[in-house]
Length: 276
Ligand code: IPD
Image (cartoon, rainbow, N blue to C red; front, top):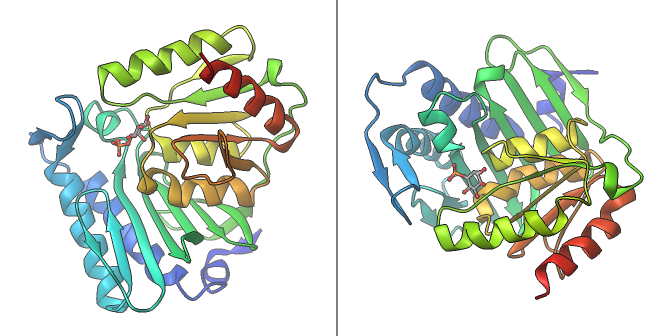
């Protein structure tokens, strides 16, 4: 365990990222209006609300207020090229549909990338009052009471699982019907080869729960960079292997993350399921 203030000083980008994440998380949790204005994006069920946009605006103000020359990529449209070599990758509200339905699995996700790789990642899950912090090469940490008064950070370690047939496996589905039918086909192909499935509805929670030993594996096709950038580092720094289906990048079209012992088995299984 380390004091939270000490952890946040272990990387120069963490204090401002933490401030932005806490501000957005408090806004989303405490200022939710009675009537959310729901609009659609890529498909009629891909929702965005004034809260997603308001959270991103607050994050941009804090991050770029402190570091105006950095780059930025946000789910709600914020994109700018920077000159420092640091790019912030932000999902201000991951799990928007859960948020709409008051299902507690939603979070704020902020990563800083250098040379296209995340160097820090923060995920806050406000309804559980929890925060997750990862530093490349510096471990992955759980912070309880993240919004109400954090004091200690606990280092995370994935669990052990030696056979994919006993792996509790999370996945997610895209917002287009056609994509979902394909994803259902993969679920069908591996349904009798894993312990069971979970569908949390929030990619960042899937990564964080893998990191803290609540899952053995998580895979999904069609994630966006902002869904993955903080979460993959949190899982990886807790000992998970995070790759693509065919290559090593976590940003490949299909992302696979698991505890190390079953990583190759999972890849083989998924490759078979994806080969017609
Ligand atoms: C979505 C969630 C969901 C995943 C989707 C994502 P959003 O993010 O993380 O779990 O299955 O692929 O797009 O749209 O709620 O930010």
